[in-house]
Amino acid sequence: MRANRILAPAALTAAIALMAGCAAGTPDTEPTAGGDATADSAGSFTLYSGRDEDLVQPLIDQFEDETGIEVEVRYGNTAELGALLLEEGEATPADVFLSQDAGALGALSAAELFTTLPDDIAGTVPAGFTSTDGSWVGVTGRARVVVYDGEQYTEDELPDTIEGYVDGSFDGTLAIAPTNASFQSAITAHRVLLGEDAAEKWLTDLQATDPEIFEGNTPILTAVNDGATDAGLINHYYWFRLASEVGVDNMRAQLKYLEAGDPGSIVNVTGAGIMAGSADNEAALAFVEYLVSEAGQTYFVEQTFEYPLVPGIDAPEGLPSLESLVNPELDLSDLDDLSTTQELLARVGLI
Image (cartoon, rainbow, N blue to C red; front, top):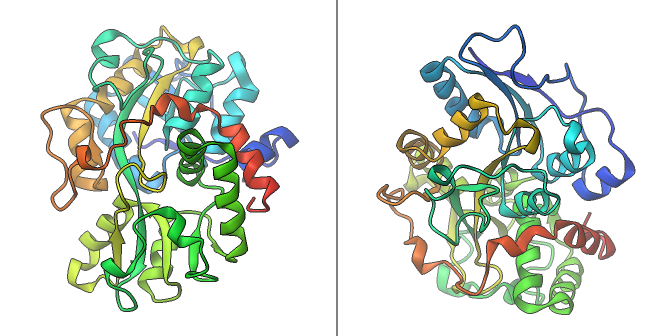
């Protein structure tokens, strides 16, 4: 059965709006918690998905077809849904949270809103790409990259560090998505790696360049690929998805991987956790297990071009090795302080 599409609520509290950094939409219906009496015997659960519908709905359909489990989905911005879950607390109708980044997962873990996953799920993904306490499990890896206009630049003409993009060279021509969870996690990583003052200075310098503001990675890629702007900050897999559709030779936009260890070159993860009140929901557990199964990991490799995190499954062709990009000094568990990052972005005027 195809999942219901349940959009974000018409209004959230002022605190939620600040944390989400963007306005919420209008719901068609409200989701119900897993285990609805109308669900079939295979069970059901409610999923809050901070991942885009076009990326994960086919996987959800595949899971439903294979298991007979019914999934009710609420789609929204990861930061927005994470803030909503903090607001709802134990009363949330959500059973599972699927996040675009580790930061939102860490924030919910710190608030003790997740149950502990079984060892056979929590231990599937190597340390460094998942939680340290079993509260959530990493699902895919994604590298932060610079996308640039290949008709205006060659790769070696572009700066190798994130500092080079705020020195005046890209005034008015650098695209960013400051309300996007991946951008916010990158700023959180900047804070963790180089300190609060360095992160604030970089953001202040970024604001001074008069950046072009977009809502997400896809419109940034489109703008660069159309020659409408020179460069942007995105996740790698958006480029590979578009290239698979139009052909690599037809891509005007190209990718620049920054120096390993640079705060602009982090490898973040998507991930999932089961809400504390849903610890006994076997359907919810089955879905999280499916995400890190061979079937789930293969879907992400073949359909979204993300890095698999389960050993023994090959990454998409054409990607640099995950090991060559990882910063050993960055613990993804330290990306849990999203609220300070959002306050910083608001202070410098980017959200």
